[in-house]
Amino acid sequence: MSLPLLYILVLNNHDYEDTLDCLSSLYKNDYKNIKVILLDNVSSRDMTEVITKKYPQVQIIPLTENLGYAGNNNIGIKVALEQGADWVLILNDDTVLDQMCLSSLIQAGELDHEIGVMGPMVYHFNEPQMIQSAGGMLGKYWKSSHLGQNENDHGQFPSIHIVNWISGCALLVRRTVIEQVGMLDPDYFLYWEDVDWCVRASQSGWKIVHVPQAKIWHKGVQRDYQPAPFVTYYVTRNHLFLLSKNKASLDSWVHIIFQIIRSLVTWTTKRRWRSKREHRNAMWWGLVDFIQHRLGPMPFRSL
Figure (cartoon, one colour):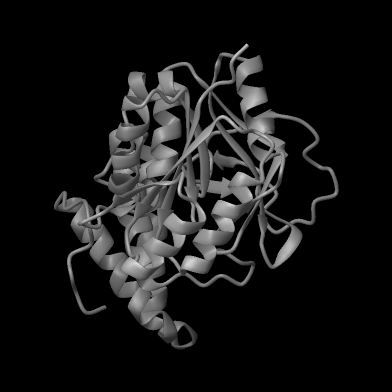
């Protein structure tokens, strides 16, 4: 029996050493029916030549315009579907995979055809046993959280389990799901688009699951991670956009707007939070741009 064809989309945004580490871990995996597409957002010609020489089987697609996480990956998704992908894995270039990661994921998906989206156990790269995400959940007011975040892995997630969403650093989607619900929503540009995709799949009857036997290590987020102000902008605006798309209840709107206003006031009036001025400005503009339905990339502003 032939193995399902897995297309892996690596969005290259970082140091080429990270990309090479990621590619090396992919080709060391025990699942061999893979095709890798490198979506090249930042590479110099020299870097492209290094990758091509070391991994000639990698299909490189230069990106002439930065369309954000969603738009850039959509280019690769379209190509993967055109070339016959059964599964599409969206993967950050600053990740390293365990040798059995891909086979563990595909095996889980092929055993249960109601599974539409899957994700691996994500660990902090600098703390290899520290969980970054064991899948994502959505709370009462559409607030997101990662299961197991910053916990040492002591076997508390022994088996595959249902979640609400999967982190976009490593997100595996069945072809049929994409054909049914569409690709990532480019209006988000950055952040919350992975949640939105999973919500759409779930609403269409697909299971969203976390597979703890599949393991990866992510360099980009650490326990002491401090997001930049632009992250605050996108998280604020896009969270509200998600609520709007899903016709969230009035109490959800009241709760989230109250949290935003409270943060804006606190970061303005409390002396010990004066360092949050840029984040305050970013949050304010995120709120304003949502109200004005200004989506996509953040307009240039001095925060």
